[in-house]
Figure 1: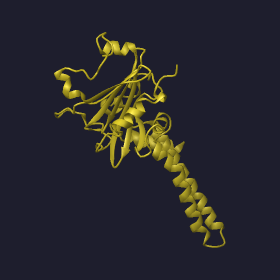
Figure 2: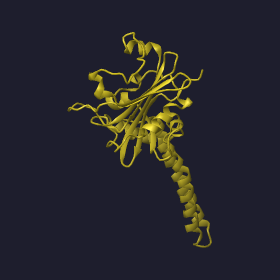
Figure 3: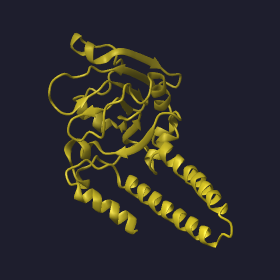
Figure 4: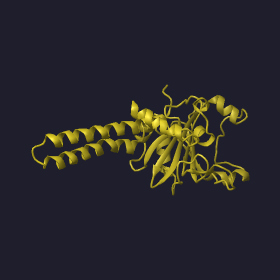
Length: 257
């Protein structure tokens, strides 16, 4: 518990900096406690050993155990939603952490975060790899939200049919009618120019209409620069177009009926 308080205290001392999630803090604290236990155990064995040959063996075993414990956390990200999402992603996608865009971009406190999610994995996730940070964003949109967003018109039948003004914002648009009546559309939105913040990198966007007036929305983003950024943008989005398609068709993203 002291380790958790110490880590949280460090975060508090760095007021104004974007915070990831308390899940990540507890994960780091668990690793600190584990490393301390290994160090104490190794020291005790070294003192009790008759031969000096025991010490390298204990050190080697401790290092092996530390790798086996820490590796899944690095590969799958923090616990909860991040770990469940990581299980649906390619093994080499990077480390996954759940974050809040409201906190990162608007410096909101906990009471101002996003509304309660409708889907089991709705939310925003940072993906760290190759020294950069990209993002995946997932969210179920219900009828009420879509009605407000579209002025009561509801979902467009074909997102790839666009006006000249929309043309640049939906490049490489592909609409796929699925056998069960759902429709999946994935496209590349335009990268906005200018000096404003945040400055988003390239991305894929996706929308899966679910046939009941609701839809699943997804963003697959190289990252952003400016206030709240967690690191440099990735060279390419966390997922390829095909990988994003696979993720959006995963039943684990949909509310249980």
